[in-house]
Image (cartoon, rainbow, N blue to C red):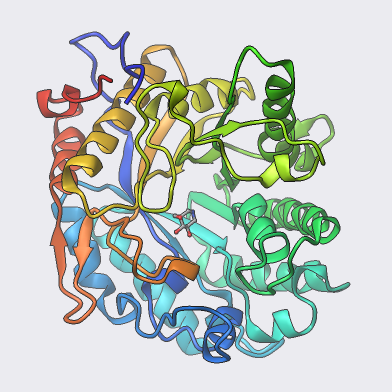
Length: 426
Ligand code: IFM
């Protein structure tokens, strides 16, 4: 698996006692019956290869799911509040949906699970999409009104907020590769505008949350790969890696700056993989283009979505974002596989990376694994298995995997227990 991410971690190392441990989810991926959303509309119109249907039926099973999280040592949980449930028609707030999420938040707190609340995780109300989505002239006003409603009715006491999830990922799939709603291909111009809009949405949500929730910590969740040149001896590959980093990693941070500082209370890092870039003439493809999968980097391991298992990249990403001088929360990290040994190796390696970062003084506050259970992985449907618990989609039974037990043990002891120190070498 390459370099050992936790090489400098002493035997005496302990994770801080108030470290947040948990899993991350998103409404459309777990709840089921998300009928008023743009994704549901696209699924039923046959524009997507899979239908979310009842997903994990978390809408009805949330208490049992939180029991499971608690039983496995979690003290935090990331969820998204589905905008299309809360505002199924423009300006119409669904009281039952607000009451539902109030119960969900209560259920988390009752179990000692700190909520980490996302306001926008890829899906939007169908009406919002039909009016032009994020590119409509009034998109930000619409989102602002929604944020106000959520903050006012549900926001009390929520400490950790995520305004929007992964602006660059949404722009890529929706406007460049075109495999997600609104299915535009090669529209780089629009993708850039969408990223700007989502960052503007973050800034307005940041202010609105702070106006009403004392002590709130607000960030957008940033998907940050660790980007390297395919051939480090080639100047053009190095340039490609620098350009991709500037665009995919640094630009969104620049877009949320105001008065000389990023409008963030912490950095929310979603880390999955290393991205190995080769220079391609023609420009734009190098920003989102396919990675180089050649083996001259040593033996490499990939998950079912072709993402490389590379824990050292998490350490590098944490070091890099630490330069912003803000606390950091890992708000997603996981692997799409049905191979338990690979999932364990992944988790061990990334726990080592966290420990190494803490040992170096990085202000890291917690780790939320993607995901609590196998769920609806967007255009891949239920074929990509990211869960700490396996989901049987016929019976909806959740079955904890070995990695879930490992995470529980580390959370309980605060130590990189021996089982978490194995198998991270090449
Ligand atoms: O499932 C997604 C999630 O919605 C956003 N981040 C990446 C995950 C795995 O692909």
